[in-house]
Image (cartoon, rainbow, N blue to C red; front, side):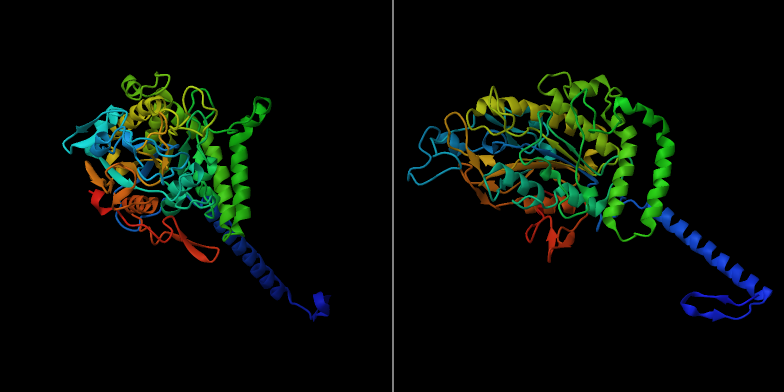
Length: 488
């Protein structure tokens, strides 16, 4: 071999044929080894799923959560919190000092419940006649009567109930749950939101945002109204239908390209989340239409959820879809019973009953009652209630004094109920005062509710934390206690 020139001016002497072949073989071996390692990395990156199921911190009582949210401020005094003293003082002045100011009004006279209360079940829990269906499930439910919020404004109170903070931008409970546990479904999102068909709730999508957690953990909205596509823009438009024919091969090619791109960026969680989201979107083209297609459900189930009822049916459909989603491994489902306030016509579009409680709660009560009672019955029939935590909450309650024919906002007291996985049926925690104005015994905030839900899922709320902007952040902030009194 002749002497040749090398980079940086280095010169190399003659090389024998044997040395040349040895070095060539070693070089090709190195190239092959590098290729094999890269292929292995690509395969690993291609299958890495940020939503893969993770083990709980300790044995869990529940595997999934269905969170029913009633935006606007459901009146505890007309539903679950019976106050004999309020009945006794009905029509008398609430504020004898003249110094009390409610959120948007001066207090009127004491106003008893617009519906009579009765005791139900072996536990003898009080429920008003507004909710006869749920009254039949009190022995499966636990009531927290001492809930409070830090604000009486809808938006901030919604954010607090969902994320633990009154400011927007923090991860929602569903995002934290999926961050901690992942999902048991590969073809559906881990966290699904089923909005009211009338629109989004106060505060909009921030209520199910991921905040500073990876974006893959934010809630995915599935439309529930019949005739609408389950996910917006999931399928190609009709004028691009020719693209669909090559989709299987195209997806395989994109998966290979994504894996190759991901292999050299193994530490980039945002990239992993984005790739996983796109791949999930492709699988959703099959799974979303399947889960929202109710044609396979029996007539008994359709009647149970009152799907043919013009007013109750839409919420019944949301509740039925929630059962179908957890049945398929979805970790967290949030259902909204009510939408953002719009121009008030016949009724309010949510539970915000300033003008007329009988009109507004009289509409929304049967809606909630029909769907939620059917959901509890159906989950039990499918053997899912013991492993599914059902929560029903609102952002705040309503005042014991009249605001005309309505009730004003009340952040001082309201009621939340829970049922299912790990809950002691027929139990209660805390009390409001004799008029239902403020929490009296064991004042409770969303932090305690969240801590209890995480505990039932096998998560220590103090250890589910992420370092962000110089501080360890939690769903429960620096607060929260597990409500042992309502645990089975």
